[in-house]
Length: 225
Figure 1 (cartoon, one colour):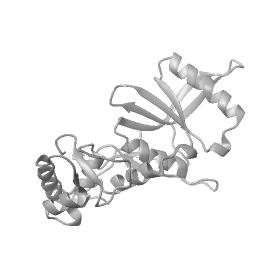
Figure 2: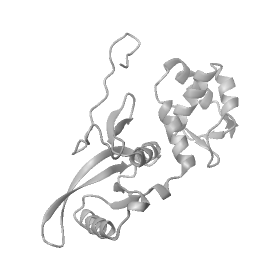
Figure 3: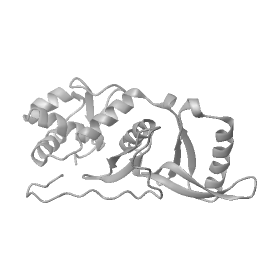
């Protein structure tokens, strides 16, 4: 159980999905991650691929709000009304609403492509979303995924280290490495973890698309959170 500094329980917000996945499956993994500000909101996943994309979408700088299993009523060519559940829906910082379906490339059948195309047209035409996108395993950027997992794993606040990191970031000029900033903060691994949180919050940005390490060069984009 998560506790605050006074020993009181910290509770996560419940999922806002329209459909709750089964708690267990013999054919695929099920689980959840936490999204949004600490301690976060439950976001359920129904496959390892969904989990990977959830990490990436949650860490993406354009994501404002991430939700899962969002229902949409659509009409099939037979005239029958059906309910489709989008795996993820994102409200972006620019105000656009994007609906996502997650599918392994090996399971991308002609029938599914025709169906999701019809759903996408109706979702956009009715104003449900501004765009509908398909996320496959072949689209995953392993560097982006690894960095998203790293920032996710470091998300728990450490007020003392976070304040020290914020001060160090405010004094930054130009490009520096995470190792140099960590040394300046003077709190060892706690300072490094605080810097990773600032990358996740968008206060620090990498100069190159690469795996985050101590030698990674960063620059300041705003005031540290």
